Length: 135
Length: 135
Image (cartoon, rainbow over all chains, first blue to last red; front, side, top):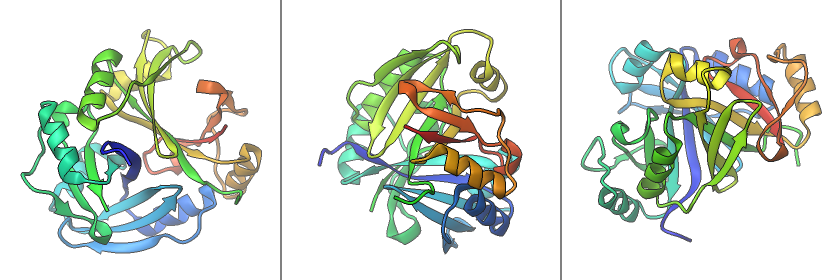
C-alpha cells in the first residue's frame, strides 16, 4: 500500500428528503437498500450505498444548525463533499501540510462507522470540499 | 456481475487552470502524474488520476462555448458531475427509463478513452449531474 490516496472513500450529496432521494437513486441506478445512519454531531441522517470501493452517501440535515444545513441553504441540493481514502491519516495530513495545505480543524473527527476524517482547507482545492478519511 | 451500478466510474471537477490544479492535487494528495487528454467535442482539456476503481478528472474548458464552460461560468470551480459505472449501458438505460427517468440526449456520447456515457435528466437527481458510463 502506498501512503497516498488509494480510493474515493465516499462522496456526499445533500438532499432535503432522504426517503425520496434513496428511493429515486435505488430505482434509477438499480441499487439495493441503503444503510441508514444518524450522525448527531453533524445533525444529519444519512443513507449510504457501497459502489465498488466507494460509498455514495445521501445526507439530509435534521436541523437548521450545522455545516451541512448551512451548505444546503446556500447551495441547494447536490454535491457536498468528496473524501479520499488513505491508510494512514497522520501520514497523509503531514504530507498535505508539507505541501502547504491547511485543514479546517486541528484534529480529525469521527464520521459514519468510526471513519476518521478531516477537511482540507477549501482555499486549496479549487472550489471542492475535500476530506481525507481513514477507516 | 449485476446489471446495476458497480462503481463510481469517474467524478469531474471544473477548474480554470489545469496545470495549477493538477500540481495542487498531486502535492496535497500525494498522487503521481495525471493522464492528460483533450476532448474537442466538449471543448475541454482534462487531467485524470486513477484512484482505486474510480477516476478523478480535472476539467478545464478551452473556450467559452459548451456545457462545461457554461457550468463553470455559472457555478464557479468545483464539482461538475459524477458518472456511475455499468457493464451494460443499454440495460442500465432501459432500467432507468422504466423507473421514470429521462436522459438529456437520445443516444450516448463518446467520452475520454472511448467511454460510452449518457447524462441522466437532472430533474431526477436532486441537484447532481449524474451520468451512466460503460467502458
